[in-house]
Structures are given as C-alpha cells and as structure tokens.
Amino acid sequence: MALLQRTFSIIKPDATKRNLTGSIIKKFEDGGLRIVASKRVRLSREKAEGFYAVHSERPFFNELVEFMISEPVVLQVLEGENAVSINREIMGATNPDDAAEGTIRKEFALDIGENSVHGSDSLENANIEIKYFFKEDEIVG
Ligand code: ADP
Ligand code: MG
Image 1 (cartoon, helix red, strand yellow):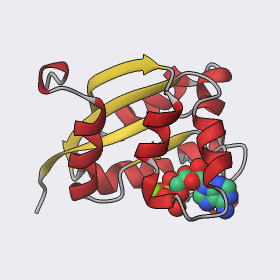
Image 2 (cartoon, rainbow, N blue to C red; image 1 turned 120 degrees about the vertical axis):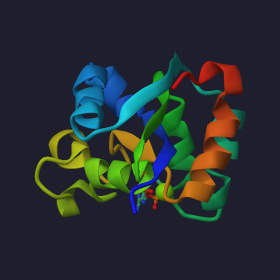
Image 3 (tube, protein in one colour; image 1 turned 90 degrees about the vertical axis):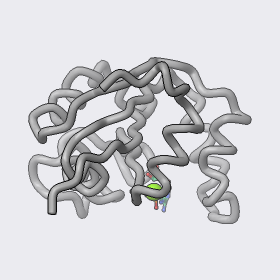
C-alpha cells in the first residue's frame, strides 16, 4: 500500500561545491518527491558529530565529520508516497561503484565518502533526523 511519508535529505559538500544542488533536486522531483522544507547551512562540528553519532566508532567517523563541515550543505525534507525507500532508490548505493545507472550517486558521487547525498534509512530515523534540523513551522507541505 502506498503511504505518504516524509524523509530527510542532505545535499553534501562535494555536491554544493560543484554547483550540483539543482541537478540533485531535479532527480528528487523527477522521482516523485516534493521538497517541503529546504535550507542551506554550514554545519557546526557539534551538529555534524551529533547527526552521525551512530557511526562514531567507525574508522571513517572523523573523516566524515571533517567532510560534512568543509563546505555548505542543503538540508531538506522530501515528501511523497513511500518517500523513505523511494529516496534511497533515487540516491543509489553508498559506494558509487555499486550504484545503479541514473541514480544520484552513480552520476555525481566522487567516492564512498564524498557521495553527494544523505537520505534517511527508515521512517523512524527520518522522523528523528527531521526534528534534529527543522522546526515544525519550517516544513510546508
Ligand atoms: P548511507 O549514506 O548510504 O546510508 P552509511 O549510513 O553506511 O551510508 O554511511 C554514512 C556515510 O558515511 C556515507 O554516506 C559516507 O559519506 C560515509 N561512509 C560510509 N562508509 C564509508 C567508508 N568505508 N569510507 C569513508 N566514508 C564512508
Ligand atoms: Mg545511513
């Protein structure tokens, strides 16, 4: 059954730096997702570390945080039917070498770390991540 959902997305520094924001948003919209909140920010170290706390024991954690604070990012809430899984399909696999043709990561990602986008991996995490960055009145569906 199709369910209207919201998911959380980040257009990462490698993409904002290369002026790919619009190209990535077009992938979301063409895939059936609607941008219902959007802001371009530079993440603080504290905010980036908190966001990726689940990965704090992974060997790439410091590299990931340094990357995420290196340039501006675009934080977005995407809405649509089955938005969480649809967004993961539009994004493609974490490693661009494994990503399917036509996905954001296949077309734009530089490598497994600088992979152009973040997308929530479950509805539960989507709700947590949306609340971490957006107030209710910043989301307009
Ligand atoms: P995804 O973003 O596809 O959900 P993960 O949650 O596993 O992937 O990892 C979070 C982010 O950490 C990735 O998007 C990527 O930026 C970075 N990352 C994951 N694995 C590696 C790795 N082996 N080396 C460097 N960075 C990595
Ligand atoms: Mg993840």
